[in-house]
Length: 605
Image 1 (tube, one colour):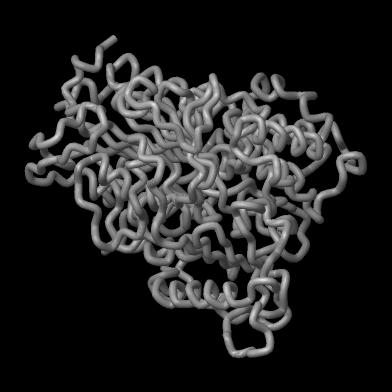
Image 2 (tube, rainbow, N blue to C red; image 1 turned 90 degrees about the horizontal axis):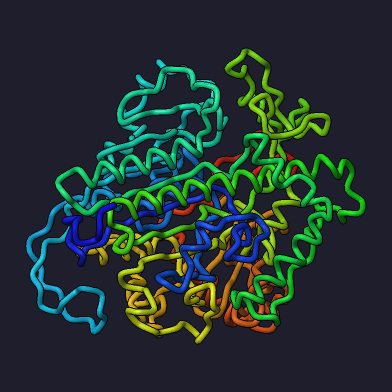
């Protein structure tokens, strides 16, 4: 095993790894109150170099979040205002990353002239006045891309090979990454992932028995770390973009069996227990009451097929734990290559838990039939949540559904695609022993620290801030177009650092703005008022809800009628932002006569 000194990378420019989970809820890992076993992710938050952020936000949906995380701008500015299709309403909704918006990989791999770093007063090996180069990072992406237009689940390998890399289908290697292994599209089988690519070549062979996509992603990440120890000793940036635990519910039986029976007490008890653990861990105050069970979820006592429900949540938990095993292998790879201490690791999720039902019954609003087909053994895949089948195997294609998603997002309301807290709140952990260890500095955020866990930051940030932070870490200038703000001072112990500008959201007509302790939010399907015009002088609220996030982050006490002037001011901020970044009214195009807008009814899909 190499020591840190045996590795030649400059200690003032750490290696950087972003690990992104897919559809993981706020309370789905152990260090954020979960019963799911995630010891390796939990270790990232430990007192010897870890920190948890309780108010880190994402952008409510897979591809908009990934676009923002990769570019440091809002999704609409990056070209993915909705999903990865061209909506025909302008560049904000073109469905792939804009060419004139740099990715963080492009920013970090470019070499910059010698710069002189000022002494920031933090003993992290960064000595004031030292001349050094910035940038010059080796870059790697493994996992789900999903920011380069559509790749239909049933597309042939030949079509993918001929399409990837064209003007509307940019690939990771075209957007700053030296190496890539993963899937170019969205979700799919964990046993035979669609659109699987290595660098610029489609993987054409059928995956062997025993292949599991989450393991492959983590193994490729470890291989890249090992290869860097034998290279020219550049610092590296690696983006590990998981599909887990996004549907379908696929996991090996032995991993599922570890959790079978543990969820027979039901989703209501899971929510209650997680809420208590979040309070015990100092992540939320006891004054924040847990949001009520979602109105579309039955009480557990009335739920049919309880053993099947236990199996669904057991499979979901297994998916999370398998991902955690891989995080452990990544940490071991860093240790054996002598770069563990000076590697910054960010762990987060792209959106809240997913309430999508995956119904497959031929009725209006269904779509999952696109994921049908044959297993590697030629067996027909049964798509949909079918209680007569147990989830997990490659012949099934299920989701864990709204009630369990409601538990994943404890203590918050709503789900993926909504911009209430349940849709946009992520567990967020930062780990950097060489700078954040208790032996380096003893600063504590809000004086909250336990024997097992490290510091806690409670100020609000958003995932595009990670780009500005990575630039600061790498010693490169933050491009002028980047909207994100660096939180590096927090990692260096400056507890008073807060985000300056408000944070904005829009997805499928759901809208929000967070300005300091206040959040204004609008749920489109709740009201006939589309909130697109500000011309009703008698209705100053326009369907908006207003919450004091310091007192009521679970969004139970709408204060809009008591603070109408504040509502008007924040609404004006939102509309100014929406105009600036190119937000269009929803639906983006008029629906055909008689057709229903299903976009905000995921539990009916």
